[in-house]
Image (cartoon, rainbow, N blue to C red; front, side):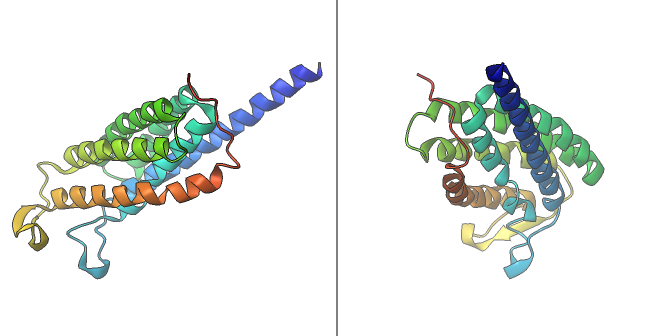
Length: 206
């Protein structure tokens, strides 16, 4: 009897944990969909970055921590649930085009992140979260900015650091967003490492 009660208690705890992961994912994506509409104006970087570049990388941290504890199958459920809720919120908080672009990029990149992390979970502690985030964030950047802004009426910008080339400003945002995600992928190893003691790992796949 005590064994049954223990399993039920563990199942309830897992359910609450997964629900919190979904809510956290939803909050990050919805906030990022709003933030990406606003150029990052400090230091004159409005042609290089949007505020969304600093919020979205947290989504990969949530995915990797969920994957570490619950495994790939449960994490995919979190991704799908977060996708549905985030798109609904994004339609309310952002434009339909950005909501569609965000949903497509989010779902594709996060599922790739889950698969890569799961394949690498048996190696060094930093390898799975770093490599999966780098690959997933690159795909996310390409899909999101192309679907959200290609062919739009955004102005062009000239980039002196790139030899004076002139391209639509959204392409500059996409490239710099990717650079920020590279930095964030490394920086997110700090909270990932700090949370490792609290988030027990699923056994590595043999």
